[in-house]
Image (cartoon, rainbow, N blue to C red; front, side, top):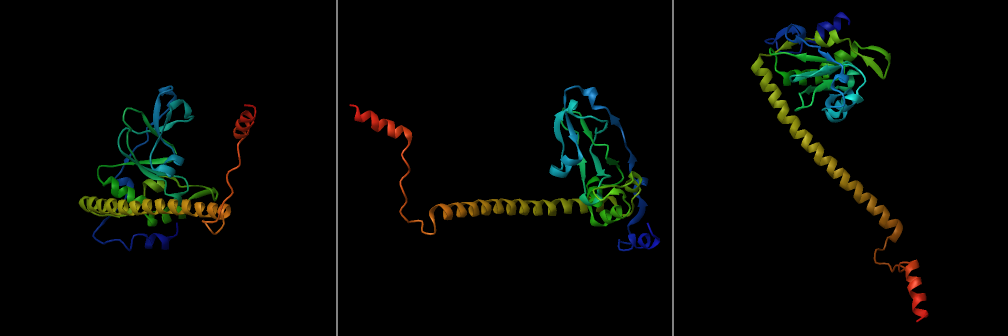
Length: 233
């Protein structure tokens, strides 16, 4: 990464915030487990596609998982190494009585020195996404991967812990409102799509005059048989 980029990286952050690399505040965490040890038991699996689709895990038999995974025993921030533009990031939570695992393509971040929700929003931010996208190691455009150390050693100016907590709470509330509006919009679009389809069907089957006389329904074969039966009585 060039010097100009590094010089500009943190200049627009409050001067009172403390500059430190994330790895000075976060614990190293990478406990792996072979899912085969759970036999056919159900496990909660934070896979890359599932997190991209729902933000959470899929419950599936451990026997359906074919490689070692990260073991999730406490709430853990997961940041995907793959295609940073997709922002495959979540806070993984142990799932009830099911063993909980996550793809090895995630970098696990845990710390009691920073607010976890603030850290989640930080790694989701456009600023961090741009940085990680600028330093990907790429074989093809669709298979870009960030070095885990570049995720773990993210340089940042950190606000006081209480400020982090308030920022995260503010973002929780505002994003929940936006998500609710998106759901209402999606429901409205679904209803409009149904109305559009009904309009097309009505127009092509009844024309533009809904009061126009229509042919009666064709007689069924059973009606004909009943008519023939009456002729023999």
